[in-house]
Amino acid sequence: ELKVEQNPLFLSMQEGKNYTIYCNYSTTSDRLYWYRQDPGKSLESLFVLLSNGAVKQEGRLMASLDTKARLSTLHITAAVHDLSATYFCAVDDAGGTSYGKLTFGQGTILTVHP
Amino acid sequence: DGGITQSPKYLFRKEGQNVTLSCEQNLNHDAMYWYRQDPGQGLRLIYYSQIVNDFQKGDIAEGYSVSREKKESFPLTVTSAQKNPTAFYLCASSQRASSYEQYFGPGTRLTVT
Image 1 (cartoon, one colour):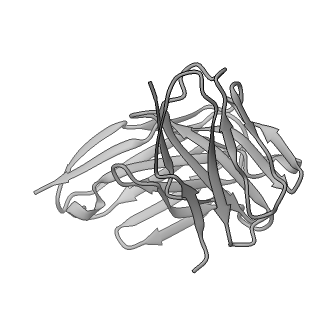
Image 2 (image 1 turned 90 degrees about the vertical axis):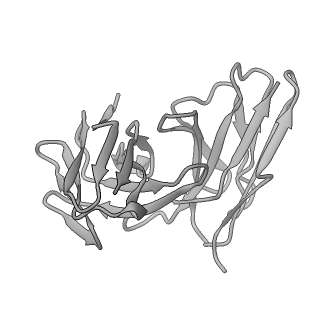
């Protein structure tokens, strides 16, 4: 059974600081996704990582994937208040016809304060 | 505009009643998914369908049923057998190729009393 663990689960950051959220998973997969969720809202896709060594960047967020270590990171650079949200990683329990069967991490609640 | 719609946004039911949640997409995606989210937790997969007239159980299918008679529609029925149905239900869809990136609908918040 695929397990996905994020840490930290709660992250309180000061504006302007840098930090990294980690996503570890338990079985072989080369498809990993990062999503953002604002309170009471649905999920917004941030990054799609499809191979070992993949790196994607959008604004102050950068995601990477190391399939050998079964680890993805979401790095936040110079945080701003607008980044406050819950961030989820999700791993595809891939294999043959099972593409799209995602297992989600618990989520990291990020709060950015002045 | 292409997207995924879920209705209703809020739904209230009495215990023991079945209820059906709607999910429609006009993205021409082959695959559709239903997730459940409980407060402070991640999403858990209930059912998914990769093609019309075919669907598979996810991790928590007990007490739920689905149908996929049309490509654009994937309704979820929460039956009276589901012991803790109160939750936020999210529908998603993806193309069966390339990245399989899933796009989510706005969700339905179900409260059963």
